Image (cartoon, rainbow, N blue to C red; front, top):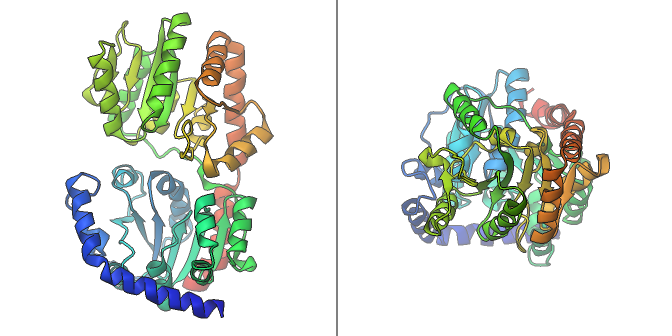
Length: 442
């Protein structure tokens, strides 16, 4: 009965996706004009390939954005090492992910933008690439993609599977439950990133035998390598900061800069030699922050302009993409944003921990709460979760004035990340290979 309802709902969804295609096309062109899509490769979002399909079996990995895309790379490397006979196709959705991920992928991996989940785009994409297996990351549950692939006999796996509380509530309603249940029944393997996520997928009627555990891939931070030019830029910045106290606010979203800059002003009274490094989630936001500060007469340096840090500079704004994991190496303290205002859901703290930073985050961390809890269980000093600017200022003040306390927090974060990352990539690969790839490719 549930499967019948699921099929009916899918027919309705597919028909709607056909009917809305002209509007979605216009929306896509609008995004191109705003710089939110690639100016030349945007037709890939309609399923139109920009690369010929090589002969032989093909494995498709898909992640929506930058964090998920980077988390996929270690598994792709395992696949290349252990199954060199396979062609690997990688897709992401966002333009920001493209700008970074394309430079991190191993040689030989084909990169494309993912198709919109319209019937025409998905059908065109799958008919061209003809994958034998599709590996989706985290929460990419798209009906046309999943059910269209299943109809063609394509095996599927969902890695680092997660669902936000809001999405879970929506999918759990009587209207949508049959559809999500029908989609989840098409997966051969689901690897949730936590026990809570496993429970959510089971409540959405995912088959228990398909659910297994390997750990959160975002713990498994890998060095993707730097060019000589990138190394020089980071080393130049490190030299400019050599005689200064430094803390970084990373992945800052709009509105959070007010919290960060207020804390910066409070800290500056006791630490006049301080430099606050602000790394907004989106580069344009960084340009806006720097412009506003310069209008107020403040001495701020902007990375994209190659501006140096002088003796009078107290704020350095990084308005570039793809440098964050390297820039964590120039600071001993990292405050991970996307977590200080209601409605936000945090960001990956493991990159900062892996770099040996003392890690702080705000109260609004969404599904990253499982990562924070695991690290704190390993060592309570590994992550400081603060509530509001006053707690943040107090925590930073304590770290800046006590070198021994700062070093203890740094080592706690690094050791917790290393311990939790151990075995995740191998465990994920083993599950993927034994349950999905062997049966699909032999």
